[in-house]
Length: 243
Image (cartoon, rainbow, N blue to C red; front, side, top):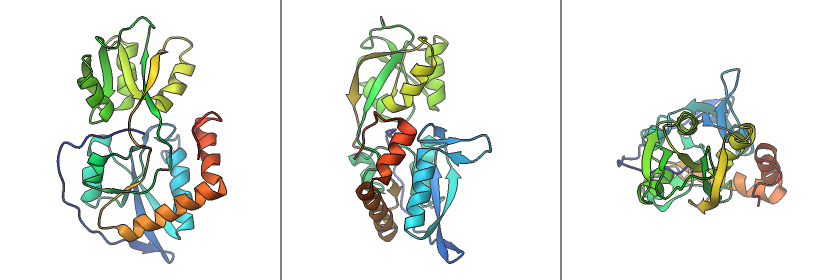
């Protein structure tokens, strides 16, 4: 549930949807670099929790999904410029973003960000801490007294810890958990989680209220019938937060 800080304003642009097989085609914008939320699989296709969720929401709304990959730092400007119709990319719902785009209700409950380092002796209050650029994790570190180093992708933030460029990385805990587990002790969590953001939702242009309502209805249905919890556990494990 990455948290983007907006550095520029953009004007919303209304874009009509194409049609295929009698269904409206909705272009789903995602980063494709934030497993297990979204990633590119060996076949070169968008995969992950949000791919499966988005396809199911489109099915329930009688829409056809078309998946579009976009870099994180320009994902909101390219939505409002009509390069795609939604953002479904581990994006936390924040008041700042809501000034530029609209959000569905959350489809992933609010969770914590966390620090990870190569040693449990790192003092994060004075350390060099890596975070992905244009995130509120980066904003949080910038105001914490630690030294912030920013990277374009989440992979680079973790690599900075591994190669000694940074003492720790600060990111979504659910992104870091599998990396720590797979590191065989080379990476460790530091301290308690830090609550940031208000859950993950789908972003849409403010002019697309009808489309937003369709996706919102689908999320409500999936919460009610338990299928959303099933997806959450499939991709994030039995201990993940659910509805």
